[in-house]
Image (cartoon, rainbow, N blue to C red; front, side):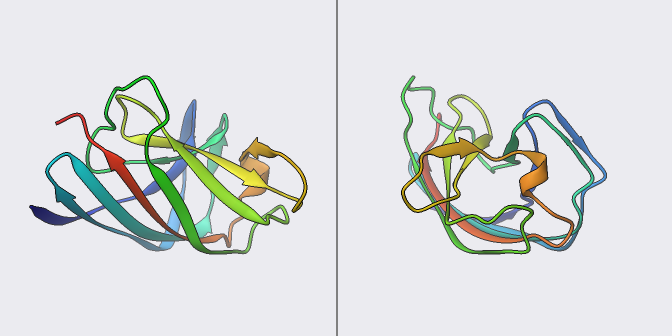
Length: 134
């Protein structure tokens, strides 16, 4: 059993720079190979995000199972550049990041979150459970 803090970053699949936050906090609980992380990021500047948006800096590497394991929830989101109904994520195997997806209309399909969908005032509160590699 282990508890701790981590620093979440919303960046790009390719790169990111210049992000600043008024709130940037994360906590985790790890029991065996199972991790539950939670956090909140409130942007003051989204900076430059290249590629689709990812949540980065998770405290443990995601298990390399070759399938999508883990569950992700956004408890709260506001100040976005796009009208979003729901956020979801896919933990990336053998990585410390998640690809982010959004639903923009209740009956539509999901699409990857892009830099234009995040704004300088975006406020994102989230939780994620996933298996680790160790």
